[in-house]
Image (cartoon, rainbow, N blue to C red; front, side):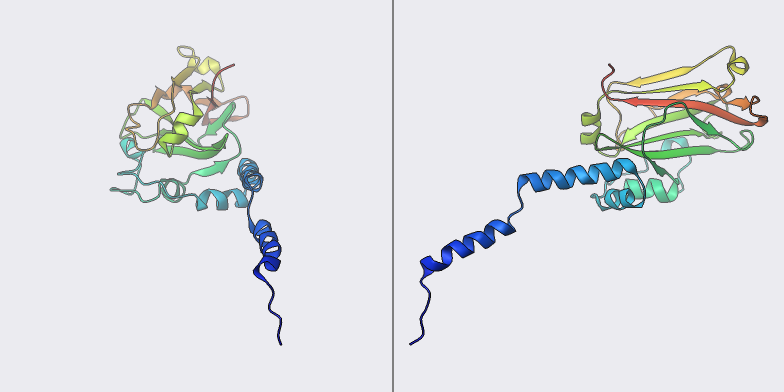
Amino acid sequence: SREVPEPAAMAPERRRREAEATVTGKDILDTVAKKMKIVKEGGAAAEAILSSASAVRCRRCPLHWAGSCPRPGPIKDVREHLVQDHKFVTRKNLPVKKRFCTASGFEGPREWGHLVSQRGQLVAYVVGYQPSFSKSHAYVSVFTLRQSDAQALGPVSASLAPLEPKESSCMRSAKFSWSEVPNASMDLEQAAGLFPLRLFSGRVAEGRPHERAVEVTIEAGPTR
């Protein structure tokens, strides 16, 4: 007659297989840590991870107030909208004396937008000029896509200075601080920093006086 194994004889083997199939908390933390490292390093792999995150919806573009958004109405995915319609690009770190330059003057609108992963939180910042909004001032705006990211990030500051201080003798620099960085669902016009266009100075020392540039530094988190 055919022998049938007793249930008790199969139990240890079943338990072993189940144990092997179980993902531990350490495995999850290791996976998250690897993804955060990839995002920090930037590149195509970082783009894939950021793109896989759940889409953030908004009633309208967070930059609509500046008059530079080509798409009216609700936004299904804010990050995708910023990348595709506003040409935001991913950067590894927040700017430190980063130069934002024009090829000529300010005959028309200008907009420079970046996305940065800061301690696991996605931060967007933009420096721009829109003559229909203001002909004498440019703007800087820093924001997160989610309110929870803003709460985790803490205070943020943005400092701007001309390359050639002599050209901006009346104003050497401008600094804006937020106790908590705004998020994309807020009215960002109320939180944007407006600074005189003259902070964009000519690149005289570099032999490019026709080009205008400003140095920008953005810091996030508690100040030491």
